Image (cartoon, rainbow over all chains, first blue to last red; front, side):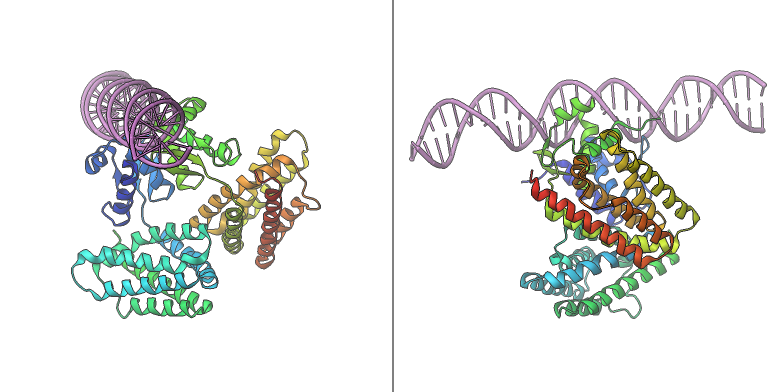
Length: 221
Length: 221
DNA sequence: GCAAGCATGATTTTCGAAAATATCCGTTTG
DNA sequence: CAAACGGATATTTTCGAAAATCATGCTTGC
């Protein structure tokens, strides 16, 4: 029923890095990880190598692994390329998507809206984040290009690391109604208005980049 | 002076997969690899995990690794996304590149031309391929985006697997002067004519896709 | 005083065997 | 006869220890 230990290690490490359990730049020592996840070195090293290929961890020969650092420049690059990749994918999905895709978008937006409305404990921030990811993935699902979808996942993971501090601070971005942006984006998409949808998507991400940038300069570390 | 065994394994396996030493779909058994590369399982598994993250090998839990299969659809997708990624990167490089970048392009084109002129033994096909890769990389080097450059490398590796059979067959593509295409592309780039350069780049790749497609239907296996 | 050399301990990397799981093939059973 | 079962073999996956390398701090020599 369950997969291998290496797969569990990959999932757990990826989660803990993206969600900020391990801080950027922190060294990941084999002995510590072995104790934390209760497994030997072999599955851990396999997971770390996969994460290195995804640029979530850095590795130096004979000096082990560290969590990949965060930088304003990398974040801005990642957001800019997200706009490029996702604009292309969104136009393709609008062109190719059928009813299954359209109803998937509606469902994902609705599930996201439900969670946004629930303003209870901070624990649900992770559920909110999962649904946010699912919504953006649903928009592109019908694009027909495995490569675009993979690049989307890579860039989403890269930028999620930067968004977590904002989510945790619950800073309701003065004046920004993110859920309204999501609704408008979904509406334009379902109306098959590619130009408008892409414009809304780009605006959405540029505002996100601004918010992250502002926060990173406020709280450098 | 040398790195770890895992790094050697990664480089050797990547080379042997891209260059076609291992055929697509072939299972990669640990015992065989251990004998072939003269090392234990640990460094091999690390290399295979990295290659799995790059989609050059497939893995199924407890059933080991196989060389990722080739398909016409994946090739066409990869080429289409290369056009997207590299067009964006080329425009940025034209905008941002300085003298170092420009002379790098000239040097890479010249080195490629020298090798094209040498029509000697088939052994030099690999040198030709290395210089071809270097030329395309040089065009984009100044784009300023690590993410675009990484996607370029990923897609280049993916499409190189499809081009190898054509290179080996030395089929001089009836009527196609590839080196003239490279020269024209470099010329437009150095003249900072983004629109022309991007158009030439797209044409270059679309013709390549056609040639691969034609060959794949001739020689299905 | 201070840099270079050298033990010492910490950490990563690799190996070889053991454990876990899959695959094959002959047998049995309905 | 087909399908399910079971044992033997092949293969992957994981562990624990050994080997290799790095980091630290002390000593030595100038």
